[in-house]
Amino acid sequence: MDLLQSRLATLSDREDFLTKMIKARERGIHLRLSDCRSLFRFYFTRYEDIDAATAVPLKYLKPVAQEAMRVYPPLPFALPHVVPQGGCSHFLMSGTVVSTSTFAASMSTANFSEPWEFKPERWIGENLTNDLDASQPFSYGTRSCMGRSLGWMELHTIMAKIIYRNDMEPVDDNVD
Ligand code: HEM
Image (tube, rainbow, N blue to C red; front, top):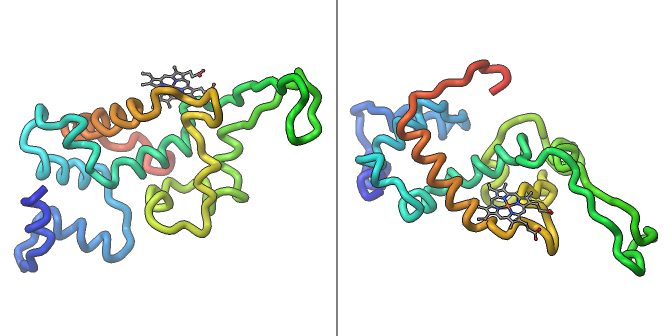
């Protein structure tokens, strides 16, 4: 991390892989997968160095995972919930099965601007055009995922390890 910070703080005419990324960032261009891989191989010296302690602080990984789970909800179908005895605050009879389609909620323009675009940056900083709470990959309420924190830790570590070790490329630039 120190290496990366000092490189970012140094103005130099000598071009390297970070020059390309910095220029892309200034022009608002998304980084390509190969750029991310270069960055990871710069940041981590060895595959074995990647664990929860080193991967979780990588700030861009979480928005990428959040956006991935918005576009491809891990549980794409609507989970059924049964209205309990006494009904609920809306007029619904007890025993009624209610559910929300995670995919519809994620892809509705009422919740997200340009919902079909993969934009991790919508999860960063102040957000006026997206209702981020509309994406709930771990579900919501009293029966939501109990392993959410462990899930996040695993997601960070696994993503970092996959990107570090593999030379990946999209199968189809228009889709992936
Ligand atoms: C990215 C990883 C994960 C995702 C996306 C995920 C997602 C979910 C979802 C959607 C539910 C259903 C909640 C509902 O019925 O409303 C759930 C339930 C649950 N998850 Fe996860 N999960 C993940 C990882 C984990 C891990 C690592 C553990 C445990 C080590 C775990 C333990 C549980 C348990 C125990 C429930 C049942 C909760 C209950 O019914 O009260 N999950 N998860």
